[in-house]
Length: 357
Image (cartoon, rainbow, N blue to C red; front, side, top):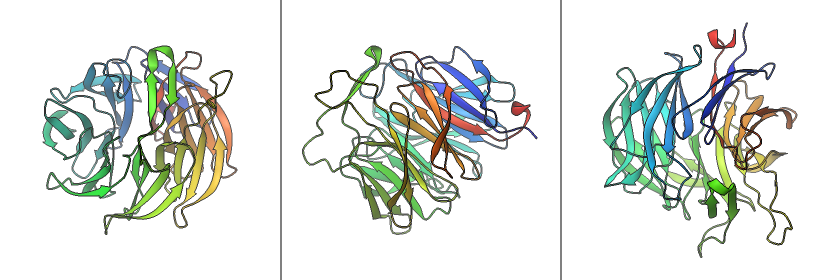
């Protein structure tokens, strides 16, 4: 039987790679994607992936023109088969698919009064609604397993929004001082985890630089928040010294969260500086393992059996394949290694099928 396939997008090279997850062989590449591919969601019933395009150039906070599309990717044909234009909504970043409602949800940035979650009918591939949120810039989002609720992180806004997707409205806000980065829900829907606060960085993608700066006064130390979805309140924390960026809850409940590490202020050269993947026990909110990776580890995906993690390293342009049994790096996949900023970003694990043959 064929192995699952890993799809990896390069934000700045604007291509999509396909890797065999058993042999790590590079299978194919789709060139010439719209700028700039970001995150992906999987539609298992149709065997399609939905890939957001957030900016025309640059990165969050650089003030560059914003994109407004989602590419529809057929991994078996290894091709983009359609493009969903969500204009006038702009800068879709994260994306989720709910098979129960057959809806695609993507968060957008505040622009001309438009904000929140854009709702797309997956069958028609058309925008059918918008759920406004009080906080601007719906950057990351996750759905509960039943698709009934969404939790949204807003980068610098100091709250996490709670959304009733069936009613199409915001129902609560959970304090998250200093803002938040990525967010994900446990497989049983009981808890949501958020990487906080927003990273205080100076970004210059064209020069290949992303550097740490002094955060605003009162910004909390980097921490992972554990949120009870019934009480809608924080019930646990895991604290670190360096910024937390991306996270994923594995099917077995372990929380995988990435740390961005930076050169010391007095460093003679600016890098490269490896990042780290932290494996956190969800019950005790303590560190179970720490695995060193390439520079600026970002998007995380986990195999269905929770034995393997795939981490896209944003700056290096690589994907680290992590053995979650031995807590070691098994392989390093080349998505765009070499440029000053490789831009490895969105990933999607495609279940075994025609794409793996």
